[in-house]
Length: 202
Length: 250
Image 1: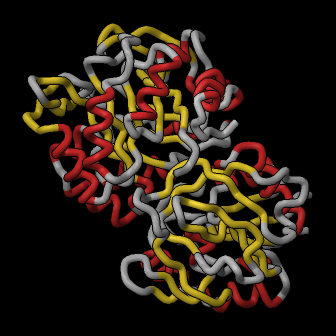
Image 2: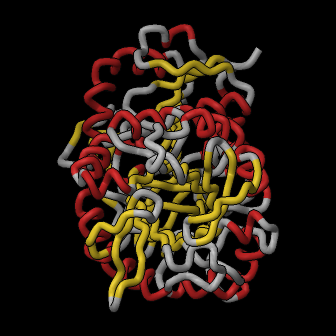
């Protein structure tokens, strides 16, 4: 049987394509608007929907459940905004406190044209579990304006350049895994990354 | 800048892909899910699905087609046509659309762009502008190019971006389906005004047309008829752009 993965719909937006992609990667997936049943799942996915303040207003009340999941060593995958909420704070629409599972602040990308929409190169900088079997560098699909820019942090495993700026495109601090790009919308490479994550969940 | 995106557009009428000339004389081009998967295999970077008759026939958006396409492909896509309310936007995103484009309803009620961008994030809201040349400028048309609005396309693009739209899908009605090339002056003017990514649409007929739109500043290059008819594939276009030194995802 495939790993049981809970996709937490903590905001408004597309989570259907995340669910479809995880199912293609072999997982049994449920979308939920609450985390009361998280204990019976092997892995948690925080998809990339909405804005930081809206997301945190719904995530805040489930902080305890998320921390318990992590304490049990079960993996979490954050996608796009789901990466950003892992940090201590974000400057999107004023300073918003995040889950604080990773140190540091999410900032607006320094580029003349934002949002950053489209396929950009992901350059691995340290060895990564999610990128096993992925040829690098590779193109992935991004759609965001904010990112974690302190790319020298040890948990940053890949970076992406935009104009003269550089930001984290993949972070890993087991059991936390997160991508600034959308693996569910990044073609074959994205499917490999999701399979690698689902593999961690059994 | 991210790689330039080549974007096949599926105009949908009653669940089928169609294509016309200057928004008229729609002809059947196939099944949306089949075409979407084929374009992914042929190197499409992104897709646009537009229900071209939803607004004029006063129908709701095409949720079932969106869901089927979303489960079949692993590249992003934008959906538009008949989007009138926050509930429409939310339901399309819920059905698997990555971005939602708003056209007629944005002109009638610009607040919708503002509210939708705040709630769903600018990156999910695309302002679709259908523009027609008029003397030295371009006028915005709505209802599938059937109704003039008196709005200047450049000013409207700037305003929609101020309201929060994260991307502009810019179609030249004069060029649509003609294969005479994009209206590059229109593209250049909107790129300068908008400061968000601009998708050029209407008129692609040859490889060099794509390059011209890229040179005018478009980061998304949309085409429909010439892909549907198999004259060129997205891969052909990207190989050509790459040979001209343009960054593409190959």
